[in-house]
Structures are given as C-alpha cells and as structure tokens.
Length: 143
Image (cartoon, rainbow, N blue to C red; front, side):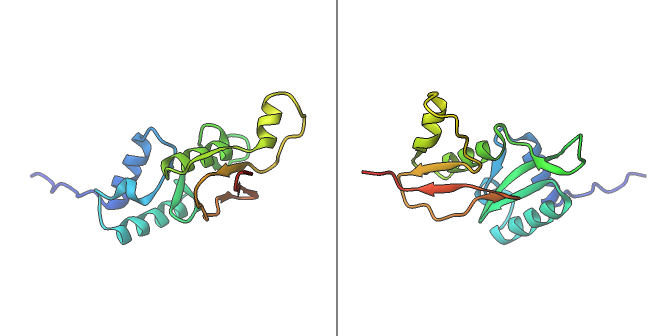
C-alpha cells in the first residue's frame, strides 16, 4: 500500500528557495513564481516567527542563523547588517555609494568608526532598514 504524496506547502517551498539562494537578502518578488503576493507575505511572516528569516524593513527580509555563543538569532549575511543594506540597495536597483565618513575611514584619514551605516543614495529612497538596534541612514549627496 503506497501512501499519498504529501504536497509541499508554500512555506516549505519558501524555506527551500531561501536555503538554496545565493543572495542573503530577499524581497517578495523573488518568490512571485511560487504564489500570490498576499500568500507569499503571509508565509514570510510565519518564517519570521519561526526564526528562519528577519524583517529588515518594508518588503525586505534577510537570512538568519543561531549564534553559537548566545543561542540568539543573528543575521547570516556576509558583512553583517552593513552587508545586508548593501545587498538590499543593489537588489532594489538604487544608485548608492559609501558616505564620505566611511570613505575617509577606509582611506586611513580618520579612526572614527560609524556605529550605524550611512549611504549616499542618488535616487529617491524612503525605506527604513533596521535590525535590532542598528539602523541604516541614507543621505542625499552634496552637489
């Protein structure tokens, strides 16, 4: 007697897609082929509750893993929160560059390290990106 094949739920298919993805940051349109927008958003919310992903901002999600020392979830993104913001801006096709303060630090002209990442965005970008106590700032470049 054979058992009927269990159909995979949307949440299971999202988990598989996230696990296999090259990117560490996701937007709902990455999963548009799996189901309707509302269904995908609902499944993503369930994955947040289960600790599979974290919400960084409106329509932006990132991969999460458990910290071996603390047992708490942390971003599993190359470069941490800063890397997640960079991937998000690139994925959303926003023209950006590092702020002057970051460039000065990278060139050795200052020793001040910014606590929260700051990016200069060329186009209009109004989203807030944050994870726990970190929040990215976006500035317009000076003319």
